[in-house]
Length: 231
Figure 1: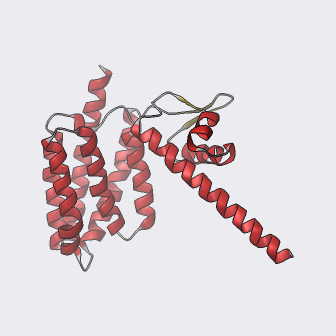
Figure 2: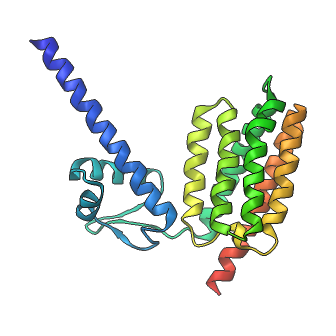
């Protein structure tokens, strides 16, 4: 009887965790896409109705999102979608430069680095070129994320991929995007091509160097785009 109770308890725990993860992913996406806009209050009941979930996993998801920096908790008032300021961006991109550099370095050290570039990165690069042709900055931003995410996961470091994905998410729901700066997409594509070339050659040092330089330039463009919007 005790064993059956333990099994039942484990099932309940797993189910609760799964529902919380579903709520977390859905609410995080709403924040990143701007459906939950900067400065807006995030209320449990509408989310519960929208996602067809009880308040319990919603509340757990909101607490998790607050820990990850996607929400701000104000005592006695609730959760709000925060504004990403210039200082926030400096901190995020500083971390990203290091992490993206590590990911590119590790990807270049893969035994099948050339095949990874040919089969995975090149199609994603072509996809980015297509969004540039149509001048679709939102689609480009999505394609850009796919490109970088592929390198993070190729790094073989699952924690790096998770941390970097969260950092990028925080940038994406900010009040600007580097791709909005005139000429930035074309420049970013050239930088991506340089990263791909280094990885394909198995040149880890060059791959890290090119990747870090790309993030620094993206940070500068992002800051210019945000400051332009604030004028």
